[in-house]
Image 1 (cartoon, helix red, strand yellow):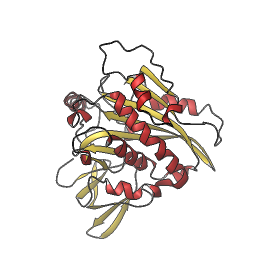
Image 2 (cartoon, rainbow, N blue to C red):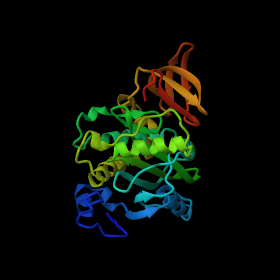
Image 3 (tube, helix red, strand yellow):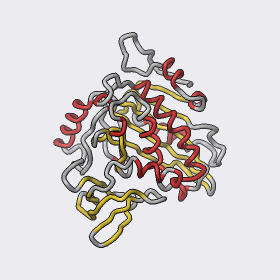
Image 4 (cartoon, one colour):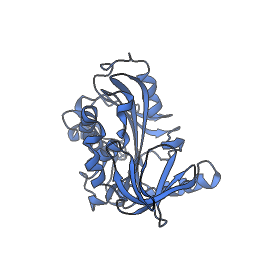
Length: 301
């Protein structure tokens, strides 16, 4: 781990990432990843996107994934341009840059594969009822039905045999009540759109001692193998696992497009490309990711 915090953690700042403990917890592969930790930045995704764009556009441009963690992101964002709200120490905010040995059309389902890996990683932590960590199509990880993790995948460049991507991950570790209040206030001010989704929650809800260090190690250890499998096999290698962790399986859901109801049916999992399968009154429908959002039809998250 090549972690370089811009300001050393003070003895009382127990919310910061403990570099020595993280190194102890990392698996063999993650030890070799360049990992930079900074106090503040606009967006870790934007930082790594800028770096990738300076590299030669070839499969060997990046020998191994690189990670940038920030305690505070002043311009952090989620899917569909939503603002990401988090106080330093409450959320683990990082981005991972990688060059995958697949053309851009071979990246279907990447965000779902990442979600599946994160569920497996988070379930290794000492959380109560790890089975309550589940997936919501397409880009969220849930804890007891509420939003725990958001994922944002962006493409920097592609060639016929490789694509440079940045994967942004935000995990709410502590301070769920504060986060929910801030999101509510932003929505009331019109700063973010009030769209169907889930109430934010944090790992501390199921793990009182939740911390950034252990969470980072668990997630990166899971992502190392996932990136390799996806590069070799695409989403097909993750389909069964994703469906096994599907939080809305067998439940009636509604798909919204630009804030308006577009389709409803029973969630039946995802196909080999990561598309959502719905059983509707008119037969089976397949929903691709895009400018759509999903929530339970009964008014739940």
